[in-house]
Structure formats: C-alpha cells, structure tokens
Image 1: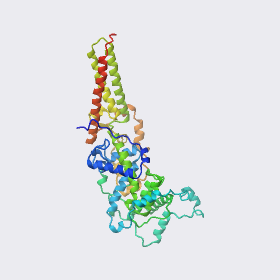
Image 2: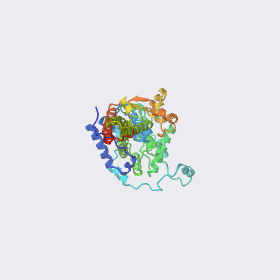
Image 3: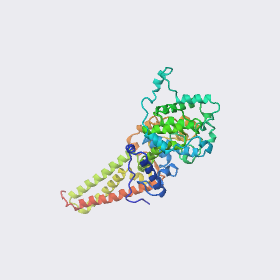
Image 4: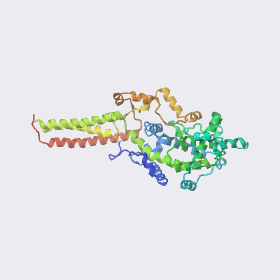
Length: 475
C-alpha cells in the first residue's frame, strides 16, 4: 500500500523564518498541527502515524522514535536543547498539577496580561546589567560593589529564618516522580510514559552545589534587571533555579534560542512564581520550533535510507545510466541496424532515470528493495558497553541529573574520529539495518513508485525520439 502518487516530502524549514514569527501566529501554527494530528490527516507530507505527538508519546518504531529524534536534533540540526526543555516542561506540568492545593497556592498563576506587560517593557539598560565575574571579583570589598547578590541574599535568608520551610525541590525524592531530567542529553525511548525520580534532592547534592546553582540563577536574574530574590518557599524553587542555569541564563550550556525580551520576560515570570504558566512564552517558542521546523526536517531526513556517500554514488549511477542510454541510442541510430534495435536504450534510460529520481529524494533503490537503511555514524560504533552507558544517560535519576550538565556538543565523542578514518568505499557500502516503522516504509514505497513511473515516461520519450530519427547507415 502506498500514499497518493502526488505525495511530496515535507519541505525543508530553515531557522531563519522563526525570527519573523512571534506570539499568536506561533500559537495558531501549533493549534493547526495538533488539529491535523487529531483528525488523522496528512499534514505537509507527514502522515498521522509519524506526527509530532505520536513520536513524543513513544508510538513509533525505529528510525522514527523519540531517541532518533533527539539524535537528529543533536547531531544534525544542533538544536537538542529545545526537545530537552520541552520534555522537562511537559513532565514538570504533570508533576506540579499533582501537588496538594495548599502548595499550589504558594505559586500563583502568571497571567497573559502580566506576560504581555513584560514584553512591552524596554530591555534593561546598561546600568542595570551585571558586570562580568572578573570585574565583580576586582570590585569585591570596595564601595563600588554595593548591590547584594540574589543568591547571597537567598542563602542569608535561609540561615536567618529558622521558621522557613524547605522548598519542594529539596525534599525527599520519593515525593516527586515522573519528571524528565532537563540535563539528560538523550531520553529513554519509553520516557514519556515512564516514572522515575526527579528534582534535585538534598540527599544526593552537596550544599556547595545548591549554593552554586542559586548563585548562577541569581546572576541570570540580575542580568535581566531583576533586583529581588525569588520566593524560596514556593514548590520546586530549586528545580526552577537549576533549569535557569542550564537553559535560560546567558551563556548557559544549553541556552534556548530566545529573544532578549522573551528571555527577560521568562526570568521575570520565574522570579515571581514557579507555576507552569510562567513558562508559557518559552514553551510556545520552543514547541513551535519543534513542531513546525525540526519535526518536518526530521521526517524529511529520515526518509533518506542511505548516507551521503551512498546517495551521491546512486546519483552518479543514475546519470551514468542516462548517458549510457544516450550513447547506445546514438550508436544504433548511426548504424545500419533496424529501428527496433534502438528500443534497447529504454532499459538503460529506465534504470538511470529511476535511480536518479530516487537519489534526488535521498533514497537508494537497492537499499529500498530490501527495506534497509544505512546505520547512522553514531550508531556504527556503539558496542554493548556504550549502549548501556547511553541508556544510563537517558535515565531520569538524580545522579544523571547532577552529572550531565554539559552542552550538547559531540565533537569529542569517539565515533567522530572513527568515522572520519573510514575510506569512501567503506562508507558507500556501510552496514545496513531493516526499517521497522511501517509508515516510513510506506512513504519510501510511494517515492519508489513515483521514480519508476517517472522513469517509464522519461525513458519512453527519449527512446521514441531515437526511434523516430532516420538511420545514419555510417557502418
């Protein structure tokens, strides 16, 4: 079974278009995507079986799983922080909704009018901006260092207030579960339905680490022109501080691609409340980027069943087949043989054109004949030990949470150097694996059928031209 013969792959979306879209248009695009998924319709070349929500909820097979999506964002699009933040926020909302009503009231809802008021505010002036860390160290102890740090004030308030209750994020880890670790580089494939420990429990975290996190979060608030400390009694305040240091603060290891106003508005909201509504503007921007840019690009990239050297090789074979058909047609036309001999050029035209059309769309017809695909470079060198480590990296445990705070860079991973050393012939004929996702195989079948029909029409036209030309009788 195939899709319509008029099927077209998802168009490539560049990140430049995001700068011209803000606010309500992004929300409308998200609503349109969700509506098309719920109706089960084809959306921009993406069937419902490969929709964004289906992938996020773990309803797809390799190579279209959540882990594959994360790998694509990390190694190809270099934008994995969007999905990591989205998954964390998604499970944070569930966790917050499960709180007792008494604790929820400690974090008031951040309304849209408050968010719009923040957006209309001018950005902080240079006088409001915090000086660099080196300059601050030089000025420390002088009369010029008169502004108290938010983190220091927070620590001082904890020491001086014996009646202050600990925040939700510093309680026993057994109370909170089901949150995606915002610093995990690659989630487990069944993470969306999994239940694992979360938060930053004090039993696994030293006091120095907590103070460092609060200090960095305080730096981010100060840089945004915010002068007073957040309410530490609110639930999950330490978790929000950690997220600020990882995703929001300027220069953070996984800084989100937010505008200056969006970032300032987000920090202002998080300074006032830990309610999930404070994340609204950032979530809209991140979800729009994932749904309307990264997800279509991921499906387009996944349709390609061969690596770049294999696809380039297939294009060369296709062009060679077409050139061979032309040469064969010319030889028969210039000879004294009958016109019927010129029909043999159709075979080369058919092979060349079909191979070229499929290769232009990123497919190798030989691999497709077996419903195989090449292993990705990062999949080639994963032995059992590496795979077990990778699964631990996708775990939601507090140990993983505390240890994996680095950026999403991969240049130092072992597979990079190993893959660069492979010669071009070995890359062309690399290891293969079966395509498990039925919807993806259906798309590839459709593209293959389009290539076959295009080759029949194109080959028939070229052959008819050679047959119609009078013979040369040169030999």
